[in-house]
Length: 374
Image 1 (spheres, rainbow, N blue to C red):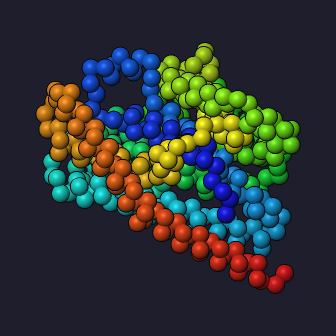
Image 2 (cartoon, one colour):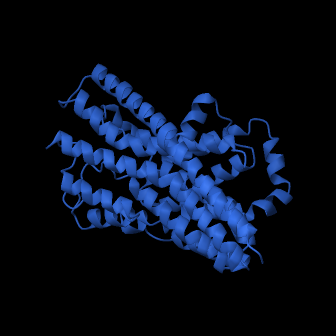
């Protein structure tokens, strides 16, 4: 098993921090002023690049076996087993919990009616939530076909990643290295020139962030042979560049759909995210402390639990509009505490046990393949 890159864990912590702040539901008078300079939905794109990079790196054995079906088919099965047990149990649990809350709480504005929320959950379970939410918003049915507020709305990005996990291994089997590299570059360039307003279908189906991660992984050995990563890792104060890029990542979304005429903001966000991941992969990123390591390792669980628990805490603690500063502070403390505890419980009781079980199953598949006579 490959050792974790702690600097990648720092980026995971930063990404989930962006998401938690972006979705924080209670805004004080400072919010309108701050939003002129900072918007944090770009944290999801940083997650995409990290996923693309790590998943491609994990598929090297599949890539090496692509010439022999008897070798690559078990590797493909083993990969999908690992991904399924890594992601689906915790995701399904946190689809079920909001449904139960909706049933138990009855008619509450912070939780959608059960039938509407069930539509959302089915789309998420079928891994098409990104297409479903784009249709809801584009057709003006937000709050009717799909829920408002979107209690399981964050599943749109998980659906996009699941679609990627199904497609990428097949491309790595079917395409020679040069053609795969050319296809990745072509899609990245095409998406840079594609107009993608926020919440549009094009915004909800954006593979370029994932493909930047793929590109970094495919070129990793060539870049390493150049000696550049080693030189970057030896530069004094090297973490400052990553800190600056994180600040740029927070600022970029305020530019709207286009960063420059004809160049989409999402494409620039993907590029900056790729630079952050590349620096971390080179050892020139930000070394985490204990809290950032905790956030990075629990980032998936934090992503799953935060939206319904924000809503539940708001329902319990802030029944009236116009809450005072002390009430907002109490809400933030309690909501983030609930989210942290729920994420820790999900990580320890669901995510890790079933992830380890899936690893064991995938190893059995690989061993059976290796034991069969040629």
